[in-house]
Amino acid sequence: MNLILFEKDEIEKPLSLKDERGFHIIKVLKKKEGECFDGGVVNGTAGACRINRIENGNIYYSFLPGQESKPVFPLLPVTLIIGFPRPIQLKRLLRDCVSLGAASINLTATALGEKSYLNSNLLKDDAIRKNLLEGAMQGRGTGIPSLEFFLSLKQCLDSVSGNFNDGGKILLDISPGAEPLSSLDLRRLSPVCLAIGSERGWTEEERGLFREKGFISCSLGKRILRTETAVTASLALALGRMGLI
Image (cartoon, rainbow, N blue to C red):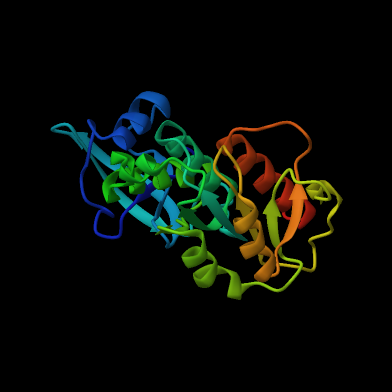
């Protein structure tokens, strides 16, 4: 946790030492009464939090907007379309996407994806929110990306793809003719949309849907990657080609 985040209705309310954030402040950051830690409001302002007292198992603090000790980072203009991954991967995937600064995450069912993944307990609101917050606190940002679920790729593309210019819509694929993502100059194409399939990849019909929406095919090389690896690698590489990292 490089920035302690609070929901708007939590700010300046007692923070339990049993809360992961409270435990981190005292046991990891080793903060004491009178000292400050960097904090912020989810999708809002960052600042310093001064510990007034620690008693009855709670931290009592004051929030001082704009007085954080180090820079806080905004969300970046990249949208992700991701074929539903294995539930065990989803937690790490969401956390890493947020810590890298993705502004929007769209999870979609795919033809070759496992349908049972859509019923995962990790898709419950509280579990998802926790994963997103962990990523934001790790990446030192207050922003939480938008997160949408779609039951079909067509529905997802109809909702998402109209927000981007041609050239800024990229399908990650291993089909012949896909150019290396590392070869693209994306500095003038912001915002960018990246589409990464589930582990069995895309069907020809799905590739056709992407072509109809103006996506270009790119690859991360010849190796077959797990979805979470492909998402993290393509997001980091695209941000680099955009000149943002």
